[in-house]
Length: 126
Length: 299
Image 1 (tube, chains in turn purple, yellow):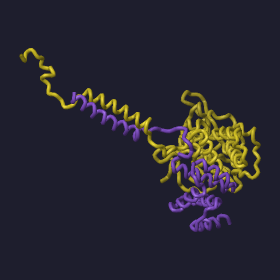
Image 2 (image 1 turned 135 degrees about the vertical axis):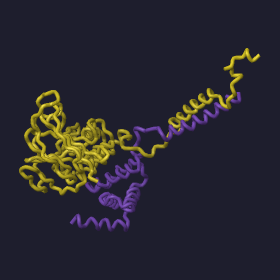
Image 3 (image 1 turned 120 degrees about the vertical axis):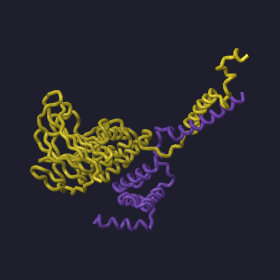
Image 4 (image 1 turned 30 degrees about the horizontal axis):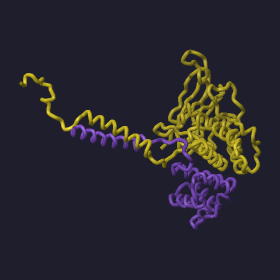
């Protein structure tokens, strides 16, 4: 009887470990019908840049806030500001940085390090 | 005494430390329990949701974002590529029209920004020859709404129509076309090469240019702009608009007897001139020759 119980317990432990590994890592639950607030960070960044470009097109800051609010961020201006600073720090695409800076400043948040990017836009505008 | 007990009796076999039956039963039970726990009780927390996993409302929000961005840069290739991230059921441009229709019927249109976004969507899909119910609900008033460049992108279908619609005049900013061979207006950057250009004869697909744009390893590249040029004009189309034929697929209908070159504007040199002529298909039936062109990155 002890032999039987020992074998059962060992089998259960092995099975649970394998089951958890498969369920969490190999074949994790794939979600559908997710809210946009759960987007992968790279897509959140892309979404924000697209909205920022929309702001550059129409200058409607309120619409940009409404469109970004669905991401579930508490402070939209700060969220955009943080992304702009992160994009600058990571030397991301200049057009995307300019879009984020434009929106960030449109929402009332600016930084001295934005200056050089604004200046960089002058020749193109001229 | 021993003669009365069979040789294969368990009394003669050495006793194993484990019971195989109990072990296997335990593994199966543990496996079931572990999977139940991992999938139902404590599933992995969702942190890497892709656009195609979004719910309907969020997908609409994402499409609006793509469209307001398109309203800014008029980059059709980028817009289509992002739409394909949503894995739309069928034509991604028609998907925009359908979402515009839904939004136009909802309270979304009550705000000026919402109405502006829908108009941008309408401009987008109407330029691609699609239609939706938003066309009847909202007039396409082009006031403050930024309009994309006036290029009309022709997206031919299979089987190809017997006649091709008139094409727009070339962009006035671009140089005029030469009588025989059209030189790309943007200096090629050599980003893509034509790795395959072959003629084929198939009665099911007469007189078309099939274009595929791929990574070097053959991975499809959707949303890439491809241009077919001929003596009197040109047409730009985008890969991935027929996902049922492949995310790297685009096609263009040729007029018989007209010479065409194919290139990726600003990214490749033009192909040699190809012409659709009468040929014999595999069944011996007369049809028009077609071409397959494959682009891949140079480096």
